[in-house]
Amino acid sequence: MMKSNAKLNCKEVSRAVIYARYSNDNQREESIDAQIRATKEYIEKKEWCLVDTYIDRAKSATSAKRPEFQRMIADSQQGKFDMVIVQKLDRFSRNRYDSIFYKQKLKDNHIKLVSVTEKLDNTPESLIFESLNEGFNEYYSANLSREVRKGMKETAMQCKHTGGTPPLGYDVDGQKYYIMNVQESIIVKEIFNKYLEGYGYNYLLDYLKEKGYKTKSGKDFAREPFMIF
Image 1 (cartoon, rainbow, N blue to C red):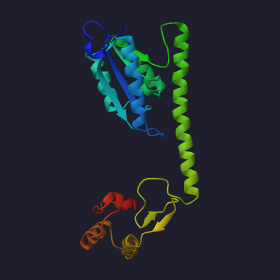
Image 2: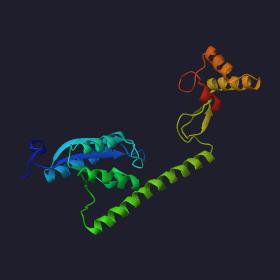
Image 3: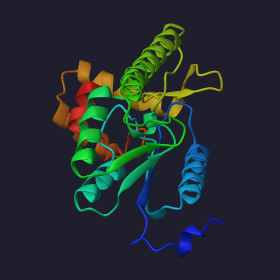
């Protein structure tokens, strides 16, 4: 009969942690819930002791600059657990160099990386599968990025908004087309007219502040963004 995970003595069984992550590529908070549920069930089935959970939300696995991921690596150096449980290996990393580097770090710290859905062991066949899997995960991420850029370029070619805050003087309608913001367009016209009259950046910044004009986000105009504008 399986023991309740809460009643397990962590000194007597393997100590496990969960690492879960979702990126911005059409994944949502529900993705985290599914990962946590699958990994918890796996840990309970194995009768291991869950000691911590690390979650990175809206973080890409192509970069290791993930706060919770780095906290997990740091904790592994302090011997706080014996194994890291992920639902899939691509939750750990989609960059094959980072994957190899941080897997080795865990190995050096005597930590085992366990995937719920990918059954890996120490056989030569598992080594080949893991290497191919790392390459495919990086390909998936690179191809997704390429397709996103392609889509943004096509959107721009149709004179549609590609995302983020629209430029000053414009709003975006439901079809992503730019429409003029009448109030903001007055500011834009004054800026260009003053510039054509020969006034410099410092004067323009003071002038806009004196008039009470603000940026799209409601802040005072600053020199560097203003120069780009």
